[in-house]
Length: 220
Ligand SMILES: O=C(CO)[C@H](O)[C@H](O)COP(=O)(O)O
Figure 1 (cartoon, rainbow, N blue to C red):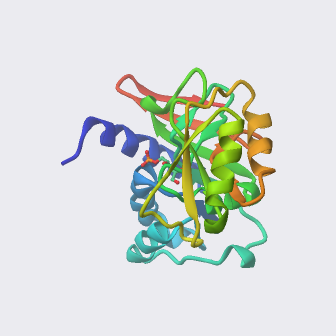
Figure 2: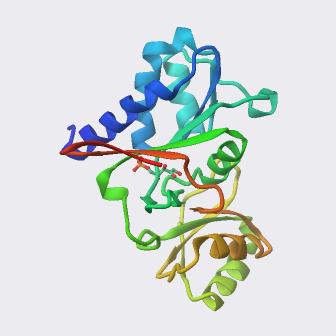
Figure 3: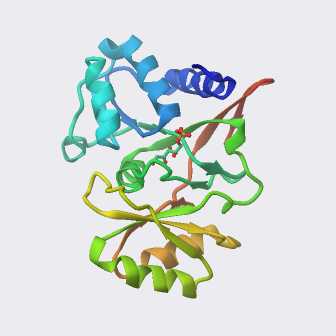
């Protein structure tokens, strides 16, 4: 069943097509909004050289559409990365990783010239942190990292039964009081055993396409 939220996600995703440059590789994120983007991208698959993918899930969908998936190490230039978010604020800082693909997403975002976030209006927040911040952790460090997170004021919850594409585990951190997202992103990264955290603050999005029943809004 297609919900009204799905329709908004689809509208934002389709609007991102115009930022895809012909004859280039496109960076592709992960999630239900990105799935709509991949379906839309298929309509111009002969105009692009291929895609780099942030997850096994997106790779599968891209390939099903006949879009070539290229290894990031073989890509020198990535003009644009399109991805969703779990939360985005007015400075285009985000919480991501609800789907658990945060590490590969952050790597591709770092390589790309431009990060374009696609989302429905429910993702726009005044302050980040209502959505639990996911952290990808090396499995043997899970308990240690959880204790360090408690010292920082968060409540870590192990996403049991979930393994990332990189073979690691996820801790979802509830109740973080995020006053300074850039500082917290750095603090979390400095805990031994943390691979990545889902705060995309230092490198936020360059543009956001937000769909609401009133129409599309472009934030930059
Ligand atoms: O970060 C992500 C996956 O790791 C997604 O971008 C985020 O979870 C949003 O997903 P959706 O488009 O399904 O709401």
